Length: 147
Image 1 (cartoon, rainbow, N blue to C red):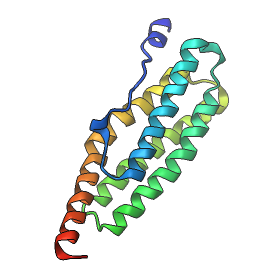
Image 2 (tube, one colour; image 1 turned 60 degrees about the vertical axis):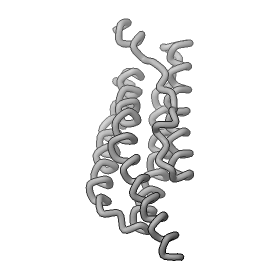
Image 3 (tube, rainbow, N blue to C red; image 1 turned 180 degrees about the horizontal axis):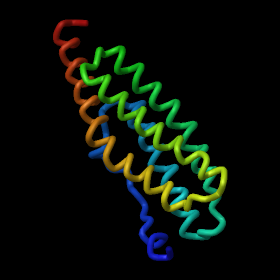
């Protein structure tokens, strides 16, 4: 188990993760910050990290962020909205499966952090950047039409 604990690393926000949508980018930066706070806490005192706090912080933030993103998708009539929202739903379901384990204290913090890290590592570049690109293109088209 010690080897797994040593594998937890910071995941640094980089400009290549920017979607070009300020509110979404700010949300993503906060996700990275939440993750990195717990990496630091875990590194300083692995036994002292309260998994439930991480879980609740992510649940609260995910609900707000997904809703904001999906409202924007509706506003822009995003053609990949359904697939993107399925990814949101899949993450939410995965995260919810951990709730009982968190309450019981039967999940290790590094496992929970791994789920979040994988989400940040894959969802933003594979889905959110594509959505951001679409929004920027639609905004450019509207400007050219004089809207």
